[in-house]
Amino acid sequence: MQIPGHIDPVTTGTVPLRGGNRIDLVGLTRDAIRAELVEAGLDAKGAKLRAKQIWHWIYHRGVTDFEAMTDIAKSMRPWLTDRYIIGRPTVRQAQVSNDGTRKWLLAAADGQEYEMVFIPDADRGTLCVSSQVGCTLNCRFCHTGTMRLVRNLAAGEIVGQVLLARDALGEWPKGTMASTADIDDEDDDAGHYTSDGRMLTNIVMMGMGEPLYNFDEVKGALKIVMDGDGLALSKRRITLSTSGVVPMMARAGDEIGVNLAVSLHAVNKEIRDEIVPLNRKYGIEELLQACADYPGANNARRITFEYVMLKDKNDSDEDARELVRLIKQYKLPAKVNLIPFNPWPGAPYECSTPERVRKFSNLIFEAGISAPIRTPRGRDIMAACGQLKSAATKPTRAELDRIAEEKQAALG
Image (cartoon, rainbow, N blue to C red):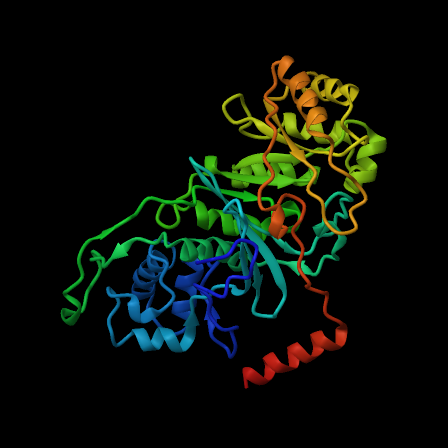
């Protein structure tokens, strides 16, 4: 039995760090998988069929071993195994909070570390996914902001978090399957399977990093997550959070189309400049206009404003009234998530008192705008909003040269 807060020794769903010259298929589109198979020697028709089969097994069945792909000829499975892998992040640590929140410290193939969090609720289960190792924004209330940006995560590393979470939660369909594609005579035992009820129902791009500073990889990963033939999670169940990278917001709406959350946290330039330094580049008025212009935003799909409650910094009655005024000025279909500040070692702020948070919330509700108070989750394992951080560090030039030499040697 897992002990809340302690490191979970079970590393379900992990694979060894990848080596050699095999290509990881996780994160590739169907067309990219097909192109890889053609490059490896399959004819165009066969590559198209195999790509469709492999895609189904990776994203609908959660398989990581080509030998388990029962609708692919047995003679071909070793050929695939020699050339490709279906990877997962390596689990360095897995922790469980007293409230059931789970946090994983993950490692990529190059050893860089990042975190993801699963938050179970009565009617939903939300996976908080990272988009970068570290962060470049330096938001003062956020523990991740004290890290340097090490690198962006690739699409495969982003979608790999979702695959690993489904591994750990045991949410892949059970049984065997019979495809309409060719099946070896010796594999004629294939039968029906069931898709069990899911605990993981929602995804938020609110982990480590600024998603819009890694737009292409985030877009690629979320397109795979939303694909109806794969993970098939509705775009209405996915939320992308930004601190306000204004030039990329319209693209996110047009090209990804998921729900938008904006880390606002202050209603005037002086305070927001301090706690969200990106405000010095893209000010509040410019940000709110980008919210008003966000494609697809309406009363049914409101923009969420995240507002961390910092004692004597941004929590006055005047701040609440100004927040209401700004939302109404820009005619925004919005709700406000009030987030009690989650402490971390060396943090320069304190959390507003419960009474102050409730008063702030009431003032916004009285103006006809939803302003729920988020219940802190996973504080005891540093998994709450603003607490994520890993020990990853940016490699030196000498380390990068050594890695490049090792890769070249592995390729022969």
